Image (cartoon, rainbow, N blue to C red):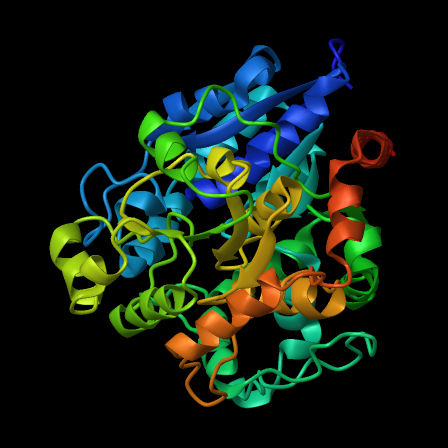
Length: 457
């Protein structure tokens, strides 16, 4: 160990949905003292990452990496927020190009441990000769890793039966099979782009060469899936505990505070799908018509990929006469909003979301009823975990073949979630679990203790 305590290097992929959990983990590690962190990211992301660190910034250095030019990748693009889906694949190529810089930094810093993301399995080859413990940090739920990212998925001739769970999958799970549209979406993780390794190959290579796996979950919520991952990979699994948001700072913007305050307690339906989940036009239209059909007040946030004409996109999704019919009780907004403030407002009672882990936890902690409308990848598995395994919230009914849903499916799900006495049998249990400061402190302390012990071994 270094004379001034343990030194940990973190290397998240260049997506803020990945960077944020790494930052939150860094804050946990340095909170108790005796640990300092160096986090690697593209130079353009450094100011934002430093701002995210808050009080932990004194113990966390953010080291800039220079990205090489990659044909097809927009000049200056240094996170997935700035690129298309294909651009995100090219961003992996750019990250691979930082290998010499990362090698030089590790040789100079000589940290005790390296926490790395799915995209960079090659860092294990740099860490091993230096005696650095390399731990694969998954920012996804354990259930998503268990269903998709295990050796049992490595079938011959590329024949991946993604509608069925892999061999040995926990029998207690609600996920023995998934609908055809979800299986088709999962094929992305086995697809190579630009001749580069697919997501599955990157993850498996990284885990196989790592010393341990770290996941942002807990045994209370995902025990069978954590045990299955440990058995499949033959690696120790350390759990950080779920990421519970701290109360938001400041006040809600006046325009939203004034509008929300005009409605009774728990009356408003808030729908939002994160910064990088975009609803197709027909899905967004059915969502809006479904919320209209509830006859409840609602606030919908719809976002679009960077570079699109948001006014035109919004107009395409807005049904004829919709604005006139819902005037005074319905608002459709595009752009950033203070999501936690809105969820905690007394008039908001229901949260329709994409089943992103952070969104589900934020909604639960805020005391909202949850309606889950996943649109891609791990969101489908998160929705099954929360709605079926943990009995939190309700899923919007979908057509098995293509995943289509209609306005009636949306309104039915909202009415089910908002019915008197119905909160999902597990809602209160898991809300109490997440907001119990003593429980969350124990989970965080246990992780830090286990992590230090593992690195020192």
